[in-house]
Length: 349
Image 1 (cartoon, one colour):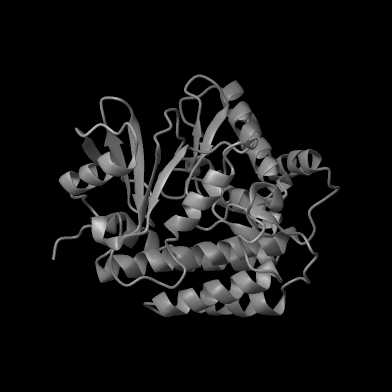
Image 2 (cartoon, helix red, strand yellow):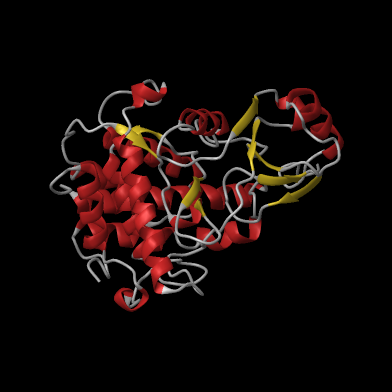
């Protein structure tokens, strides 16, 4: 069977968009983005303008995963806010068109940084980009969901309790080999979870620099991408996700800041980034941060375990990279345990 996740039926998608997207040019070229492991994403080039199509992968999927309809809804709702997003055009829920649900949005030109060291940039750019990343995160969490029609975007109740239960279940559903560190981390997530403090905001769920598009000539963010994990939840989970990535090794695999002289590159320490966030949100401090950091390692371990399982099942967006990522499940689990103990490397570098 042809893997339709990796390609599009160009005549069929062209005909559909010609009928449903005003002004769409019938002559298109299609390129698949190689980044991203969840929802296959394609660049649609036309003479008039470029678009991006994002679809669910084919095959049997975990329940609630690959929610492109939620991605479409939240980005459309954020259009006129201080959180930059691409212009949404249409959502197609008919699996008969290309084999799975998909949406189409504008292509946003600009710079995308694969890691926070931003190789080739000067210090002023690095400082500015991270500061705007901080600004956008605070802006997202300062939005009252009801003002953008997203008051029902997530279930009520204890966000951490809900997320830990969800990702534990999805990890078990995609488990391939035993990972003792992950077993211990799951147990500690349940045993050490702090009480619900009542904070409930829009959360992105995978907030990091490589999910953002910045201006080609400045530090301004033009779009936040990849909203698949967005919901109503606890804002500190997003903040911890930024710090989590920074605990990883630099380079193509880790894309982090472990061992990097941040001051020499014009980059903030963890505490400086957190302090700026607190100032922008008018809060004094972030309580239980070590737990939230451990939680983000736990969730990422669950995510990449699912990526590995899809690769083994033959429906990963980028199978080779998926197999590579899958090897890091034990690493993320161990780092999650260290985070819970307040022993994450480079925490305040």
